Image: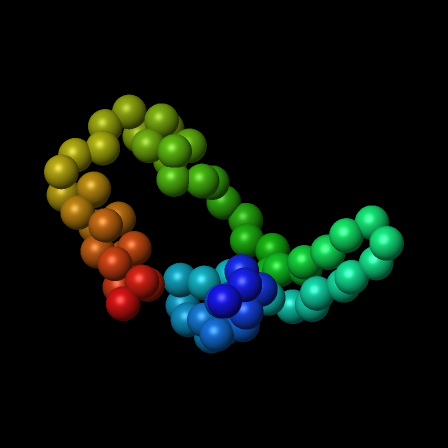
Length: 68
């Protein structure tokens, strides 16, 4: 399964970006996804200065729910 096929298969999942369009031209493949504002997980950790075991467990739960 290609990455694009995987994104289409996961469409509508609350933890997945929506794939809006895919364009192919002589320069390559262009993928248009929804815009999400905010910060990456690493930036959020740095900003908080403390990322405890409970925080890590919450992130892992969200990740595993997405993968299930």
